[in-house]
Image (cartoon, rainbow, N blue to C red; front, side, top):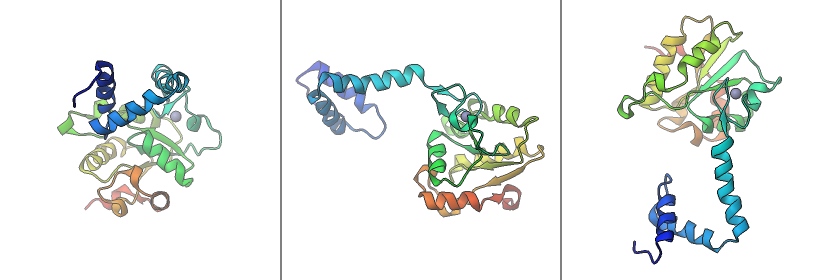
Length: 204
Ligand SMILES: [Zn+2]
């Protein structure tokens, strides 16, 4: 692309770094912003600044939060005996939308992926183990996507958690095979959480 302005080019390059945004889309977005009032543009850039400056990860579940302890962990309405382990905050949002799950979460922050150089130590697995130690938890539901990385992570988690006096279950991912959790429709996801199966029964 030949730009008539270096400033325009810089902005387009920044937008083009976003996932799923090509140069053409980046240019369209930038030109749209350029047409907006100063106040509108400020509100846009300020929301990003504020997010970067103030956002936290919940100290208990590692979900993205405005507070040290997220609203879900802090809520007295939630069932503290069940923890649902997910990859990231998008999964928490998807499961919350189903309104079928009333327990707590644990956000891993990714999946084990040797190809991408992501090992167990890069995730919040140790924190989960510490969280279970001495806590009144009866069940851990592992709700990860049905991918090779998801399976590897489930197997690793199972080995880490199997000696705790808890039920370990996984959601029925067959329905969403190969799909990522966030794309499963709410009804299906809600149903898979309700009809989760003990992990042990799936081996062999
Ligand atoms: Zn939390």
